[in-house]
Image (tube, rainbow, N blue to C red):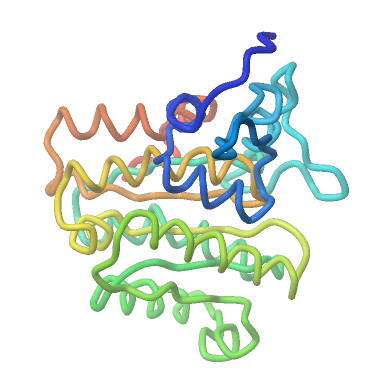
Length: 246
């Protein structure tokens, strides 16, 4: 492994994140950085960047003291996985996301739901139909509804990190995140910005005890975007892709 120190721009490219995010993580003590020169410029080691992503220098996932995976559709999904699902009907949306949320809530795992308006209501109704008391789950902090509003990418990721941190303080263990991509697209304002968000979210998810599932409505994204979605969620290809299709 190279011992060369990376500057902020190089570290951001390595992590596939923005320079602002890298600076924020370093200043918060989450990402190890050294300071050099009179201006105190940040420098980063590749080994520390890999550790931040939740991987040892050899590439193995670090999850000391926590389960290394959670169960979904008969599969053991590694913590730190950033997954994509695909559907083409309104009922298909629920078929992709509902088992993910339901199984987590029944296993007493904190679930974060990011979906706006009618989409959120559709998930909540579907959970109620599965005999999940969503009102009680929300009150207990077991089901957390991430705020839906127009927001910058850095603000979105910072809020995501905060919610996961709060969830693990209350209830140690795996956290499940279900993020509706149609909601995300509207909130960041453009397809280009949205896929930048997805790319920057991956290294964040890698270092947290979370599995993130992002269902895509094939009616809202063209073929090129679907390919981009698979690139941004390459973890999906480690599992049986059929389970993520509806």
